[in-house]
Image (cartoon, rainbow, N blue to C red; front, side, top):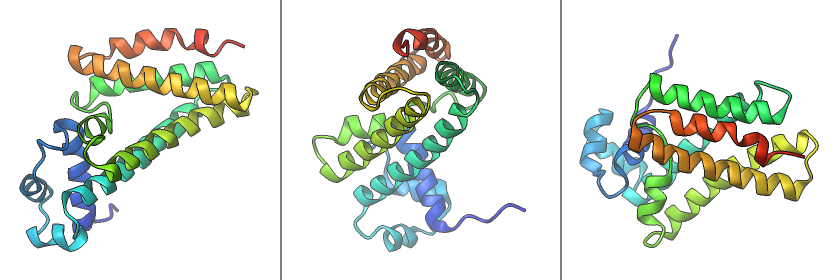
Length: 189
């Protein structure tokens, strides 16, 4: 039995999707309300500080969702190289099988708001830190030194983000598949 989503959850999920697809400035509160199906007054009830507060919560929610995907993907193999490659290939396949607009989960938001909203910038920074730490923890578990693991995690996540921008431009997962080939070079011991 599927649990019914609350109005607040619908608003957050819709905002997360729209911010990812359209960016922060192109997404209006009326559109979020309309597409979520939530009563108009509920947006300001749950987010009295408005769009900025909603964006921060949406970024946090997106960070958690992506963290779950990373965690699941990194469990596929004991070898960290194979685990990271597998995760990247899963991302490429998911892009091609599902919604081709999905991709870089917080990039559009941080690119648009980093210089205008310190609160949203911090929420995005926290999301990236979470993902980096997940990659680093997996590498540390495999025997990498902490500093080496943290540097490699940053490079891996940056490669994935950059590849996703190319994926969106090309409308296929090939850029992700290509960076997956280079993971052994980055993670060589």
